[in-house]
Amino acid sequence: MNRRNFRARPAAAQALSEPLHIEHMADGGQGVAHIDGKLCFVHGGLAGERVNATLLRRHGSYDESLVTEVLEASAQRVTPVCPVYERCGGCVLQHQTHAAQVQDKQTLLAEKLARIGGVQPASWIDPVIGPAWHYRRRARLGVRKVDKKGGVLVGFRERRSSYLTEMHDCPVLDARLGKLIQPLRELIGTLSISGDVPQLEVTATDDDVVLVLRHMKPLSSEDRASLATFAITHAVRWFLQPGGPDTLHPLPPGSDQPLAYRLDAYGLELQFGPLDFTQVNFDINQRLVPLAVSLLAPVAGARVADLFCGVGNFSLAMAHAGACVHGVEGDSALVARARGNAKRAGLAERCTFEVADLYQDAAGAVARLGRCDAWLLDPPRSGAQELCGALGKPWPARIVYVSCNPATLARDAGLLTGHGYRLAQAGIVDMFPHTAHVESIALFERG
Image 1: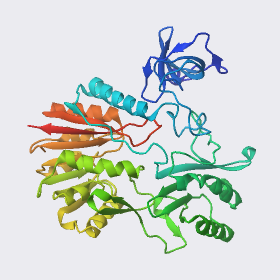
Image 2: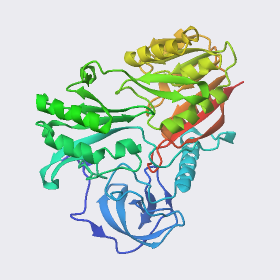
Image 3: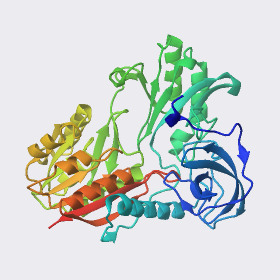
Image 4: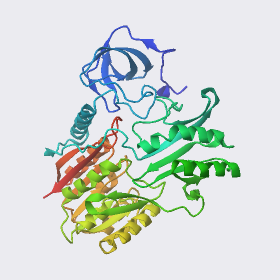
């Protein structure tokens, strides 16, 4: 056995002999306590609480436990809304008030910036907050046939498990999507390939609901008829995906018009495909884009780079404000979508787009950009380390960094301050209420 990978686990869940005091909150939404000096992450605990707990797992440098009884409750503790919250892994913070979640995420961002990046912002941006419930417009739902559960399950995985949660609705999904979970369970259970459907991609725009059925075996004619009837009954559109992303096609054929979301502050509508990346929280995106544009403050004719531009979410808004925007994205399909969105918005003369790998070819991409007045960065969780490391003369005066990972933002903030930038402003964007995910935005200025 490779001892480095060995994890000693209790043979069964063991009740701890002494109550735990929750000292503060950890990155993953757990409470932090110590047992005889050893770190212990406490699932279901809140800062300041005194709890009884059961030991779940032992690790080399820390343990994991689960609250079984709250002896002294925090004022932040509330009753979770979801009936399957204790099992479902989709949320981890429904037992905490939404306001406290936001404050803890801001505290976490400050701690990461200081500890990893060695920086603090000159001022904090007020948290960007939207609805706490039914906010999620896009999701990937697991599907699994489980005879012991009476048929097909549709939903999110259970906590600390590969099993799917038995659920009938979801209070964080857009209400139109949540109420489809039970009908989808019943529908897929009737299909001839019910055991070979691993997942569903679901999207709800202001005007449309689209479902992508991933299936590992061909559908029968009866299956297709059942899907068509479901579409009419529930006012949805189907796309089928029998293989990779390039196998995606509509059912019925010809009904493949793209989806769209709006940026009301600019009178813009952006189209996207069922598998294209977009923000899952459309309400927050309506607030985030104007905030990013206001921080960059582009003047007419300013040259701005939108790096990891996707379908043009920020590009078109900055062009609408008068900037000349060059978007760069590694996915050619997203670049094509961005070009189409710019053309439909009448902004093609102020928007250009390029396909480039911003990890493997960061230096080349920066060299091709040349002089820019400002950059906007919106990278994946891995961050923009290569781009920040490749920065050089001529320096952009401002950089707005939109991040979905405070640790990589903090790391990259350290690189940017090493290049002579200062962290002028930062704050959180509450993109995923009731989860431990932390979205944030930061403004860096030079000179």
